Image (cartoon, rainbow over all chains, first blue to last red; front, side, top):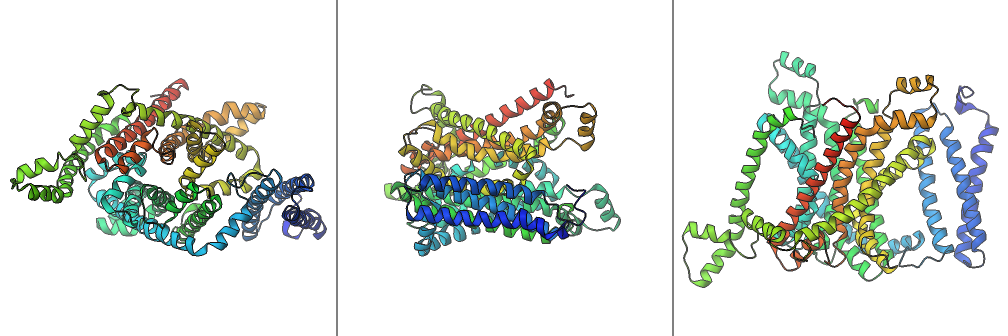
Length: 329
Length: 295
């Protein structure tokens, strides 16, 4: 395989046409036909639709295998290929979900089809936006900022005094493993029903990962580099600012990424213990009670989108800050 | 978590002194937070207590804003040792309920994670198509789905331990899958080549090289997984309407403002987490000894 493909982008157009273009056209046509069939008359054609859907899925699997076997030397094209392979997999999960729900007539309260969830999202954008603002922007984001920053600051201070660092590291490691989410009812009693109590939960949840990872990162720079800084007669803070903090950045970003997930979880779960009548956690728990599962899935989709976008943004920022790290070169 | 014996001696003094300072701060904090309400009570009763009397009173309120450590300790003692372990007032009973769904979910999650990891290592296309979605699935706040899973499964008559365990499964499979992909790939190319010169089959390479090489990764990831399972089990108990388990104690405490109960349940959950992690650590050192590691 690899011996043949010396300059793989230029291999003959006929092969690309047969292996890539034709299956892609077939898959798209089959998907459109199946979706159309289950939208118009779902009962009579159901077994045929199922058959076509499964064939399209198998073709897509084969297509993905072919695509990931293609050795592409160009880095950007190769990244694009990885993206396409992952996207096809994701699209087919949604597609098969839609088809199975329709063909096997799975009750709506058990699993609503993706199309219904999408319709619900479009129909209730104002509610979703208000919940998003309450839970993600106010509670999760503010809590994430304060918690991560204070964990970082305490770590920098503790690092200055070795005694503190030696004590805080085991304690922080232990507390990171505890079910901290349990403090939610206490915070609701202390800070009331509004977003302040949720932000407080998020602060406590994000503090310790930031602390532990920053402490570990500050020890990541090599002894040799530190000795070099000493020969330059640089002070503690100069060494910290110019050598150890930059070297700690991969660890700090790791903490920020972990915290972004924790912050959303903390903010949503804390709302199960009492909220004003707005917020994603509140909406999820009440709409579950009313069996409006499409609304619950809509909230989950918004949360997933927000979480993924935030995570992706952090990853981009990390790439530009830690451009020197071996994994990006 | 590199707490070897030599490092433990080094960390003992700092850890205990920081814990002592935290305990002291807790008492100060309890006074500060309970004092306004206590002053109000005293004013209504027409009393004028001295400062030391006020301090004592703030540390012994029945429903304090912030209970003092000894109050929590007393409540823990009473609900752990003071009642029969199978009575509904016993924290041992509730911890047992949470523990059972934690362990079931942890076992299922570890199994699922192992299967996914082996699949990803041996089927290349899965890495490109499946792995990105697994990682994306963890940026979703999975716990937010907890109430829906419980209610939906209840509507098709699946109740009890399984729905909670499923939430734990979802939380615990990810660290195992990612850690084991790393672990199964950890043997160096030279070792793999050596196996090939022995004309070892794929199965032999798997059992005799990849699995032993992945053991340290396995234990690191199941430590994370078991802590996550416990969180999943506790959150899974919230929407069931406070029947049994540590999560239900938290919820009941927040309904009736029984702050001491909440703190006691919280400490019980923390102790449970520490015990679980200690058990995994013991299993780890036992396995290492069985595999012939030098202590």
